[in-house]
Image 1 (cartoon, rainbow, N blue to C red):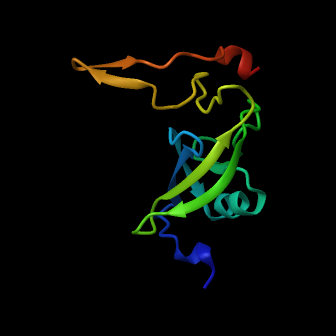
Image 2 (cartoon, rainbow, N blue to C red; image 1 turned 90 degrees about the vertical axis):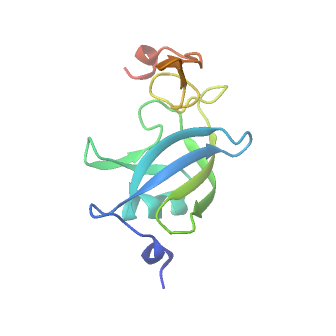
Length: 129
């Protein structure tokens, strides 16, 4: 059986994907992949997602230059969530978030409010021209 057939795709043919920095264990981002994106990720060793807003494949870093090199592709025990262990390239430290931060998970709940706790490493205006 093809390994892609073992993935439990949702009704839209997508699976949730978590990108985790291999060196630090930091959770960088969450995205979606369809069958083609996940196959390309495994083939290229580079994170490829499916952009629901654009309705097409999204090669991480195609606009920003902040590419994710994939070291491992893992699946959870229910076969319905994929974990990518990656190295975030294109900036030091790596920028995974479109806001110019290291991680998309940069806000913490504090006293009933979401407080940004991680700094902007690069102005998003200079990333996406």
